[in-house]
Image 1 (tube, helix red, strand yellow):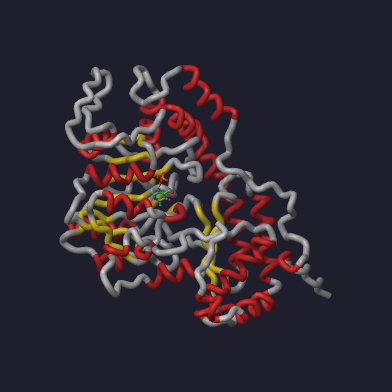
Image 2: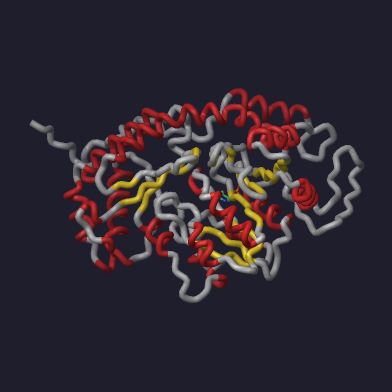
Length: 431
Ligand SMILES: Cc1ncc(COP(=O)(O)O)c(C=O)c1O
């Protein structure tokens, strides 16, 4: 005799993830991280330009070695890294930069802030990264750079994108903000294009204790320009008395030694965390893969995924519903799963070309059907799986998914009863 499933938590039943289960915290902060920061505070060298400051150059050396690139510049944020990369490449008014239709807003903002035009390319329905065919369709003689994003920690299709860029004579700027440690054909992200841009935001796989970013390149001229642009356009050569003369119009995009020291301390554990995280994530995905109508992340051959964000697409047809029901299905599962204690969320509610800041750059009639579909029919897991000790919590989340899937009849009824008016209503995210 099969056991009757427990009532769903949203209807008053017991939660699949017991309320006393501590939500994993990210970043994991160790005594070593605290000591690294404390050493900077007691040492008194609180800015990157303080004489004898070693944390910022140390982080740069270590990240260049880690990514296998010749140069690294540590900067104030991932956004600053993107701005500096585009500026160092000479991207400006009249130029176009091809950007994927799904990313965090900073990817396209960096282009607009250079006075250039972001040209959006749709994404691949399985990898969620920029689709090379879509890039070919929108790129042209004004294309100065391609700006692929290794979204969620999976490298974009770099072989195809590099080929397109070479045909166009364009640069490739990797937005690697989410992909520390990911790799493509044995090379780490940050070493796959002309310039690599990373974020050190505390939500990222390599976090700092504030804001920070890293920029990698093999090109010494680009590196030199980045160093100038990072510090007011001055000649930044170390061990020279600072003149405060601006040779070009730069910014203050420096990182501080406290953030650099914390990031270095985390970097020492980046690979170990990645190794320990993977089995829990894979076991979780394995269990979810057997649920009908739920599509788990894929890893194309030759790629290493950094598992920064886990995205799950929902297939209404596989659940006996119509394609138009995708949003209502997502909403019903979002509600049911969160009630069970599974903290699913939406990552990005709108494709970039629909953001008011970017719509003036979008040609009339341009459509991004895959981006729109993916953001409508998927839910994500963010941060909770990053702690390398999250395996047991992920197993409890899998219990939550399996329990909700035992009540698909009810979920279907919820979806079918959603009125057309409710379906069309503006959706509010519970991220
Ligand atoms: C894909 C992507 N690009 C750029 C950024 C910007 O990085 P930051 O927040 O460090 O400025 C982020 C971070 O949120 C990101 O996820």
